[in-house]
Image (cartoon, rainbow, N blue to C red; front, side, top):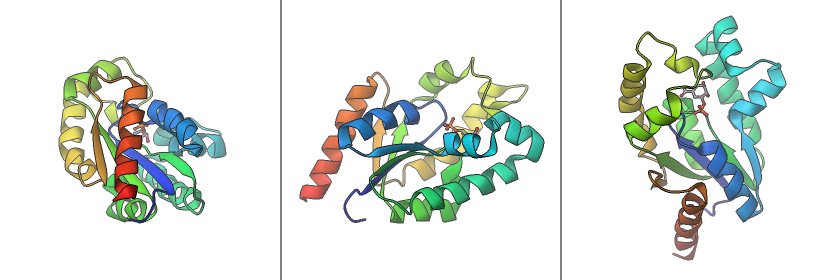
Length: 174
Ligand code: S3P
């Protein structure tokens, strides 16, 4: 990993990648890009519509293509969807093209944020709480392989951004 020319946020749905990413981009003077928002804009469809019309596989293909296209540039804070790094090729690509920061929260915090959300097709289930727990268990080990991991429980988005900037500065000085 060289300098943090790009900062890539990974982590579970609801952890705050978009909120933190926008603030972080402002503070760094970088451009904020959200992979899901790019996909929605380009297809003219919402993420749930893409899942229901074309299936998860098609969404994952768009996700991988979008990530590669956006990261041709530098000076970007990129917010990725919670499942993007489950493709090992995506994970390697992200690790090679920026500083990867995983945001992590407790299961309770995530559920509080997600329980009334209707726009997360990965949680469409008779038992969304259990689906969330199972996905989290599968994904956390991958999130923890990021260059940096930040716990967000009990912290404001501004505090999380401060922490990320401090970690990056320490790394770049060292
Ligand atoms: C997904 C997370 C979503 C979105 C899609 C799939 C996932 O993004 O990419 O619904 O597999 O965890 P957020 O993490 O921004 O909610």
